[in-house]
Image (cartoon, rainbow, N blue to C red; front, side, top):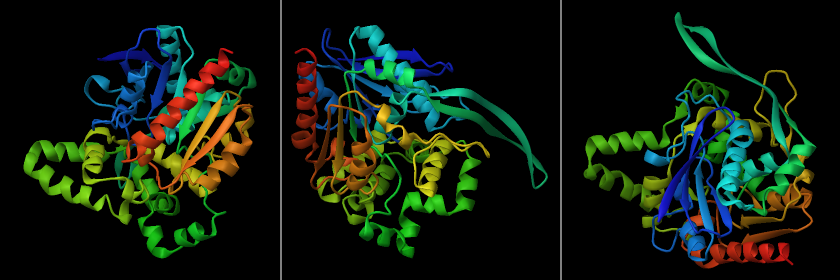
Length: 393
């Protein structure tokens, strides 16, 4: 049922795309977010795969893995150096994926992105491109030892002509829990919680943005081995390790401790365990650094490049003009609904746009939680169908 296709980016990275092929069916691209892969949308739990849900409705479904993401035949090459950031994903990966689908189907697709997968579309559709990009190896000495690190020199701009062209290549955009500005200061309760010392220690984003030493240490690593560590230990220790580690973590995953990532009542142990085992991915350190930079500056901007003025993505949302659906989770602590509406929805240039906030949903469970198949899946599909019908009237 599932096929695997490949495409190459402008900087010669091979991307893998899973495809549920429905010849003649309307193409839909399902883009994963940070630390995930294509299995996030094709979740291997009965009735929890949005990809198969759409396929059964007659859509031609595409599931790309961004560079450095995926496993086995569905692994997208990162050229082994991990010298890329979020700008690269938007400027190189997204257009390569869309062009591949256009080429293979001769139809304009819908883009559905969760978290970073939707944020990348916001960047792409405003016409973001490089006027200069260089990645070089810089030799540094640490305690008498010679080390090399990647040094970025890049300049991002928004091109209106490119924005118009890109908006015309898609039938529509659906973003699910996709940040538009990494700030929570306008929410008095959450701001109070974030400023609490205990929360500062536990909250991953604030933790990174406020601790320069940790950020500096992470930047010396090519990637954060979130999945690789579990995978290696499991292979060495076997099934007993799975029982010893996965079950307790899955148990804890349904408690408030994990409420940053999902709304615990909308998850169970099996969903948490499957998420860890099947869709978890290593995180590029430069991607994590860019997220931390966004939070530090409470904005949404290009990767820091010395003293050069960065491109502020959040100032160019008016360039996004295609049909747009923004979905939020009422309990989402990463993409706060009030911020999505105020800083994103109201500033988008789309004449046809809709904002929908689902009660008792968090961040990841919008796509694979207990209530996602009955609430979120049909809502998105009906919007796609209605938007398509409107196009042909």
